[in-house]
Image 1 (cartoon, one colour):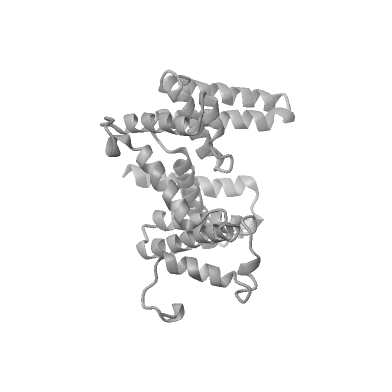
Image 2 (tube, rainbow, N blue to C red):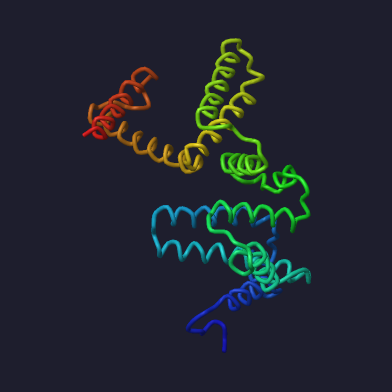
Length: 270
């Protein structure tokens, strides 16, 4: 059957379509792409899928997962052309990995809690990657992750290796200490230490977030959303009063911002 006239397509058809697009008579754009040239596209498609999840938009999620799948297939076809590996090889490897890392499901290991599952997962991962030390497991955490997410993953690995704060208060005190160090560097106009001190402050906030059992990345995401909505309210308030927001100085715009914040606080208390 001609691939253009099929009533329903599957993953194998997607592989074939990408192969056709990259063939000598295919698409001028598709056939010159490399892993590096579509790297950014891969990242963007994943973020768009995540946005669909956040929006709880099922139809949009289906579409975006298709775009993510296209990226996976595209990278696999590039390697297939080099006789390196195929999509089936990728699926085979991940299936084997899932079976090995779930001995409590596919084997005779007992794991009744998520904590036990994660502990087993880390141990098996270290063994299969021939990692002898926790630091080697840390090196395996992707450096391209958003820094808050990377910080959390690194800290969790360190915690499982025995290095962590004793409790929430200790983590909270660490945040206060890091903030004081930053304040001191500002007072002393030590601009060369700002980046380091801010980084350490953020790293300690991530630790506190773990002890409070909150997702630091999600927390910052929510704060960004709240800030955006409040800024829109500030614009509306300024427009109602005939004020050009771009002409305001910091003190005037801060006054409007405080009005918005107080209003929201009062609504929360009702």
